[in-house]
Amino acid sequence: MAVTLSLIVPCYNEENTLEGIVDRILQLQSDDLKLQIVIVDDCSSDKSREVAEKLSAVHPEIKLAFHTVNQGKGAALRTGFLEATGDFVGIQDADMEYDPQDYLVMLEPMLADKADVVFGSRYLLPDTRRVLYFWHTRMNRFLTFVSNMFTNLDITDMETCYKLFRREVIQKIAGKLQENRFGFEPEVTAYVAESGCRVWECAIHYHPRSYDEGKKIGWKDGLRALYCILHYGACNAPLPMQLILYFVIGGTAALADLLFFHIAMSCGMAVNCAVPTAFAGAAVLNYFLCILILFRHKARWGTAGEIAAYILTVLVMGVVDFGITKGLIACGWPAMAGKALATFCGFVGNFFLRRNFVFQLRKK
Image (cartoon, rainbow, N blue to C red; front, side, top):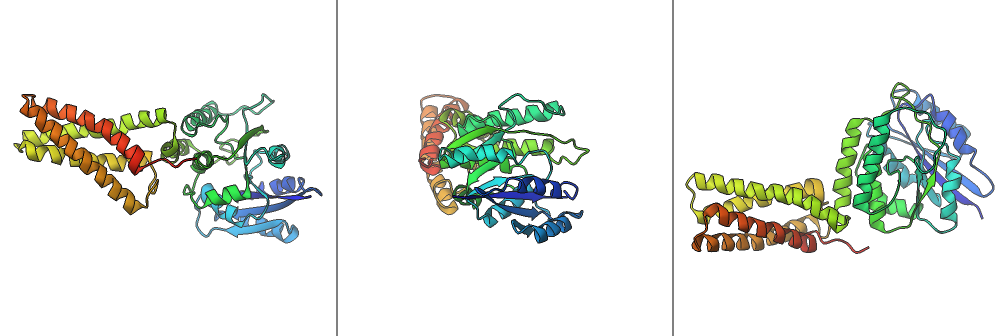
């Protein structure tokens, strides 16, 4: 029985290669494999749209979508995923860096019902290859390594273009996706890991092009990818990674708490006012650092419920902080020493309350 493969082709200023890659994709078609090619033109400024329309007029397998404003690869893929109707959905860049024939290999674990997602890895097997950018390759490997620490997946190439999904898997994930550019790769990998679906890898061929030839990804995208690994992966990361991140974020808030307390006391504020004022300032900083870097909104509650739950934990830990500080000062401790120990207790208590109450992990 024939199955259908939908390949999403995000396109931005690829007039020189679009027709060639479509011709190579069409060679996959057989009695057992039908194709749907979804070309999403991301407001190209060259003749890519005209080329796509000409190809669509000749090949009924092609479906077109157009953006009126350039948004990026991630946005184009989101559009394409919603248009896909095939049994399996893959990604095919409009350049000639990847060989569509590799999808035949990637389909094998899918057809054998062993996998729900297959990554095409550029690094699994040694092969003859074009030698280009050392730091580009090192960055890809580094980002894959960091991503694996947060997703607990043991993959070799997170940044690969070639990702193949069962349609129901990617369309369920697509509604969560937010990244418009190349942050899509770590973002979708985090959601794949979160879903608990079966993941396989297959070796693929890769023919990189230079920046002079039209390569678009740069060092800023690498920094964004690192941020995306933290932002989308941390809420379901293994406990050791959460502890490391919380040590950085919670430690920053704890130091801010002590600094605010020192400033308040230096300005002559009474201890009864200085303790809650410093704690409140640190709590606000801690919350926004968590949302910015560590956790996603609506991790367990709706956003309003999440904030209410967080305020409750702040009130609980605020009472603990005030009680410990006042108690130690009453026992003869210096104010800063008492506040420092109270802050440490808050550092520990806040982590457990936040992890198990405010941002409780979803069970896989």
